[in-house]
Image (cartoon, rainbow, N blue to C red; front, side, top):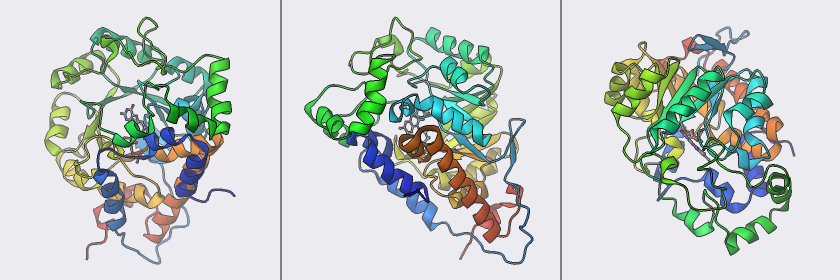
Length: 382
Ligand SMILES: Cc1cc2nc3c(=O)[nH]c(=O)nc-3n(C[C@H](O)[C@H](O)[C@H](O)COP(=O)(O)O)c2cc1C
């Protein structure tokens, strides 16, 4: 049956993907308080309904970093997109291209930024940076992104440790993938994925790897050891951010900001934007919800830098709630991954189309025709 909403895509993805991989994408960390909190914060936010406004010609477009986007949506960087479907990152980039929105390539993607650019010619690509222990390798990534014409760089700063995902330890899935009995059974019971994704990789390009790691350090995702140089930096400070600012002449956006003070500091160091994000409930389980943190950050730096936000977007109304709380545009992570897992480019595009349609509906019910009309007073206060 045709999926009618993101939840339908999620269920279809759950059936298709090995359990360990589905849980890696879907779940949170520790007690998953953060994951539940994201949803309840969004659900608890009610929107004012206004009637008899002319909403016959809605416009969901916006300008982000000088570019007009038909929707205020960017596809988030997600490390394993290339594992949910064969060439998953290329599929996502093509879906983004078809929708006219950007796709942000992750440092830890399975396909390199060059191959994604070649496979989805004309796609609007951004790049997400994780800083390696070896800063020379980081500089190399910046050079490559620039050479490809990428203008927008997300500097992810909210992962100072590998988060504690206990269920991942139990279900045997991790990156790098380690062979286990549970993992083997998981593959056998999900033959569609095992054949269409993993077997296809093995028979063509080999077991997938982190494509941006230099060949001399690259380890197959089935092998545990990763050289120290390509471990994510354990000591990552504002000096590193300032250093990247000196080296990157495009737009620099700090991802993982949840406090006005951090947003102010990023601005003072020359950031062009921030992503207000609790990383989809995947990092600090006790973090505040991005939706709750957003208004104060918007009050502090709004108008002086671009404010993006993410975490938990599953409905068009969620986009409206983030915009009403101060975001210029949102990032979507899991929703489009579910779509990719179900149908590659077509599935991801299906999810974007649903979000676009729901956004239009929500704007019409709330009596707003343009994104600029979605202001703080769109949120109902009892
Ligand atoms: C499977 C998965 C992998 C992710 N990998 C990264 C990553 O490598 N870098 C990063 O900055 N964010 C990463 N994220 C976080 C997303 O960019 C985004 O902040 C988050 O998914 C938003 O929440 P949502 O999934 O509820 O939309 C990942 C998220 C998921 C679900």
